[in-house]
Length: 300
Image (cartoon, rainbow, N blue to C red; front, side, top):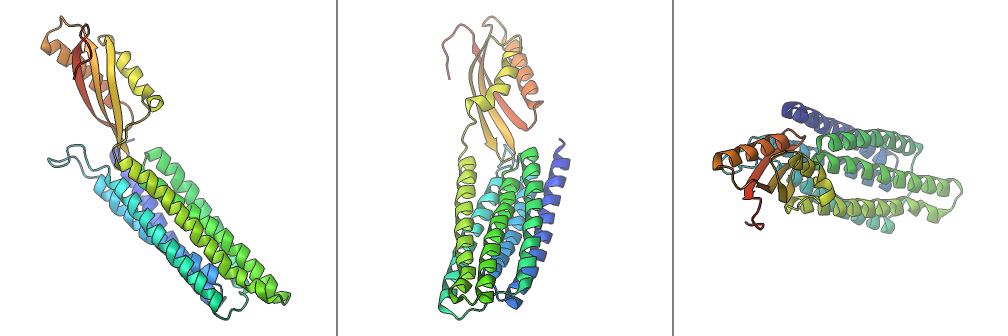
């Protein structure tokens, strides 16, 4: 896929997230106030945080789009991972705030939520699940940490909306059946939402930090690269291959062994051929090839 097309799709996805979350946050916030639901208000805050998350993803994508320069010879791909970490931190803060607000509700007089809150939550669940599926598939297709993390923001919103629906339903049932303590099912659902959000933030943040720390791909993940190298006739042996993720693309360092009687120019030509073959693979952005003589022990 061409880089311009990749970023066009990624930026469109970020725009869909921003617009969709703004609309949902407003609708859920208004319905939460009018319908007297702490759980729906907590869900509205969650959606509002997703707006900031989608904006962070957009900024990260714009930064990652910049070409390599003197200070960043490997490009700016990790800007997407940084954006993903920012989103995870935002989610964590929002989870804490939702939990605090829901806990305080236990010490305030409550009334059963109105029916409008149920309809709004059901609409939110359908919209958010559709947004999750769209962004998750696109993130996998484009190999973008930021988009994948952002998709899970939508999935966490689905779970939080389901929790809100259960809490609202129980609170409404308590009001209808004159069971006063069931009214507190609404803030209990808010607390459950906060736990889900915090857990999601921790998981996604940990994965993004792992990517930022320049971990190398596991052996089974680098097998396609190894096959390309070993299928080059002039390569006698593959001594070493390390592939590391740099945002949405991969950078490869490898050591190959060639016939020791070749000239420097001939060895260089083989290294160039290997590099070109690897660069032809999807998402490989740069390759560093070190040439060793075949009969020698593995050297640095």
